[in-house]
Image (cartoon, rainbow, N blue to C red; front, top):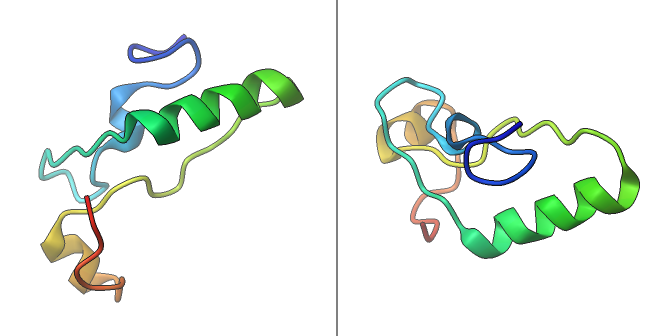
Length: 66
């Protein structure tokens, strides 16, 4: 059980570096929840958001909208 939707938790939308940065796109959450329900299978989020520092460290695209 998730704490922000039936299948997803806030920690899945937090930066993996541990800085505490979280960006939750409600529309993305709705699409993910619909897909999870439709297919009846788990969806694992590898990287839903990154802080600017972590994004630069992993070679991510700069200036992505949050």
